[in-house]
Image 1 (cartoon, one colour):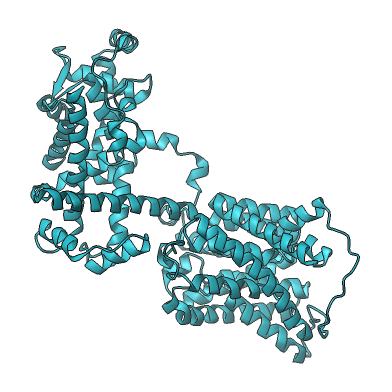
Image 2 (cartoon, helix red, strand yellow; image 1 turned 90 degrees about the horizontal axis):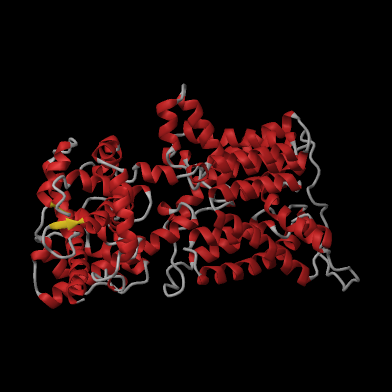
Length: 626
């Protein structure tokens, strides 16, 4: 509201340059042009009539690039496979497997998985083949055993098994019947362990991470020494620990350090080829730039700490002190909403991860075992389990809501804004003692979605100013077509008749459009002058984005999805967002304005009209005072 007031139109402002532009357009474009572009007009105003049209306008489609189409989790792909491809179950299974590969680095994206798989075959065809065998085995077993299809399709039953296959392929190095059989068995075991550990950790709201891979693979590596028909040597030569004396080791060079940092990302998949590592990092970046940055910085910090500690230069160059810390910082970026607090905690976790790796290396040395990702699991689980104890510093992300860090940050910011509007609406009721704001029809709840983020999209002056852009031109052409008598303004009745002339006849939609039209009149005379009509068209063009913002807010609050808001649900969401809980008086107001039970639509309507009325009233008051 304050931002909107700062940009109120000055009605006596000289508009000579703009008037000249208007005259030029009037002489250039006529009613025929408006008729030719009728489909574009319908794309804009359809938002008042059809919920499915929201967010799918031609203007929004034009700005969506190919990169963003494959950004994030690519949630549109499963339905596209079912609807367009032959043998959809086969392509769906392929998609699940690619997502499993990406999930090793917390990327629920088949594109990320494809990048990584290509990199693994660049590194070693044999090792990549073992990894693929483990991957397919894990997902097939999950399907056969009837595990949750949503988890299977997200790749959560395959990421441990692909690591099992890569580990056995790396440590054995050749095609042979015994390691092939071992890959199948260990991969199946990792799926079983995943289910068991997920159940054990569920009360603590923590995932099992790569613990199933570590336990299953270590079991095999420990037992293989008694298997005379399995030709595998120890991964690390068994030895008793000994303290390293101070040596004259030279400081690692910058080139070696950089490649060690890059290899630290690849070593998560037991790969040290630079091209392979670059492909892995690129695949992560396609899904989430934030995760890619966290993976690189985590490896960088891990190697830096190892240099300061005096670790072996060759191991640093091979990325062996960077991969656990890379996973740790990436996990902290995913399971906590990005903030300064989460970065500080993540940096601390990286330090602890390197220390844990030093300790695990000594602990496993007598058994000839690699540490694999055990240090990452120990420290990350500890950091995840502290969630809820630092509400003033960190906001944790519920497991069911995890996508990518960028989306988590956007969602939380939106939720905070939504609660601000809700609390402001409650405050308005407390001050004015009125219930009228909630007694409106269904279409009024959409008005909030057309107005609450206007100031975030445009300042008020830019909203009504006519620019030489497509929406501005279209608004003027439409205005000219409606104002056939050249009165200089359009009434709400004329506007409704125009909508009906282009085949919009739904009663509720016409009511909603008329209400939005009327509220955009800054002089409160139920007519729109040309500038006001341009503002109205701009608002209509961006309403889809606004509807998504508000609907997502209430979807989050309504945790059980039953359409009703419980007191505990609302306070839980407020607590999640580090906001104080509602008191009994505030809850009583919400119950009163919704007629007893607190329904989502009623609260949306309540907040809609409260915020909308405050915004429009303040704009009109400022306009009248000039």
